[in-house]
Amino acid sequence: MNNPFYENPQDLSNIILFTSLSWAVISLFIFQKVNSKKFIAYAYGFLFQMPLIYFVDKLAVKYSFWVYSDRTYQISLLLSWVILWSFILPSFKMKTHLTLLIALMIDLIYLPLLSPIFILGENWLIAEVFCLSMILFPSLFLIKSYQEQKNLPLRVFAAIAIYLGWILLIVWDSILKIKDLEYIPLLFISIYLGIFAVNEFYFRGGGTPLPFDKPKKFVTTGIYSYIQNPMQTSSFLFFIYLYLVSHDVNVLILLIVTFLFSNIFTSYSISKEWDLDDNRSIYLKKVRKWLFRLSPFSTIRIKAFFKRDCNLCSNTENFFQSFNLDKVEYEDANKFFELMPGIKSIKRAVIILYEDDGNYQVEQGVRAMSYLFERINIFFAFFAWVVRLPLIDRCIQMFIDLCFGTRLIFHSS
Image 1 (cartoon, rainbow, N blue to C red):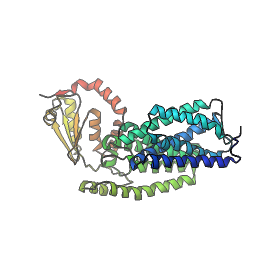
Image 2: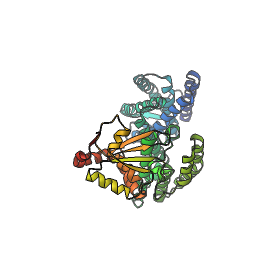
Image 3: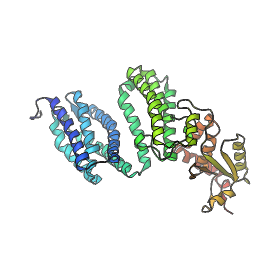
Image 4: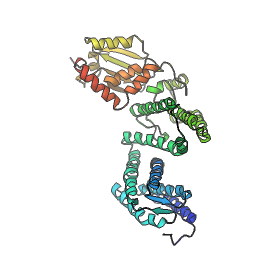
């Protein structure tokens, strides 16, 4: 049924978008007097929601949950939807269940009025509930987590979803043109580099790859001890792969933008956001932006402890000592308890990572060994980074514990 209030569907589409933007401005800057941190939190939600809404909308149209009389109205309506869910509703600081209920009521009332440009199918509520539970609910939790600087694993997951979601949103048509697997190794390399970089940001930096939710520490360990910009290199390789398989000019433009971003904006942001002491300045000179080093540039001291009356442990220590690893000291296991008197027993080989600012981090088992393997060269480092990934490190550790666990236990005397 046609909407009786608007003869021109384009007028209705524009009015909806204008109204959403107006309410966003009113709720944020007049009613709430939002500060920059809150605004970034809401923008976080917007960036998370937009790609997800776009792809869910594609599926909803394909399976007739709803349809558009003209696809030219799609972006205006989706933007309005996401602005409502990411900026307007969260700005009123209601309980999560109440926000979800109000969002549902708004859609129940107004979506049927969007005819003729947006026509609902018989089962449209199924898609609506899916969007509320799988997009709006995690988005609200993400916004709150960023404002309170909590739930880092969720924020890291959201950063990955935002990064991949917007890339897919931009180059989706090019992806559909892929017909062969000729350059698939290049794709896997780009994925691996991105995963290793995110993993290091999470465990060592306490942050995410997103500029507005960056690590709390200047990360120079892991993959960053071999190359400055692994995330940008990952994106660069991905766009090269995409261009090779699709020959799309838009992808080539994105490739050039990625390169310029890494060389101009990243260097500027590092100099503005971090206090570049002598070690960090030397790091920026020694570690290249785009090309991997064959051996790492180490800025973190490691003290490794081995149970020397255990043949397996002693042989492991001798193996690492044969490489003359930079900034690595080896000690008998008993000396660990002199440094850490509060710890009475250790089940696995252990290391201490010493920061320049005096802080330290204790790692055990395969994670400890991975930091030592990482110091050897780039080939051992790739193995170490895989071992250090979540779940993989636990599976390997469980296997080693089953085989050798009792031989690696040592206690304070």
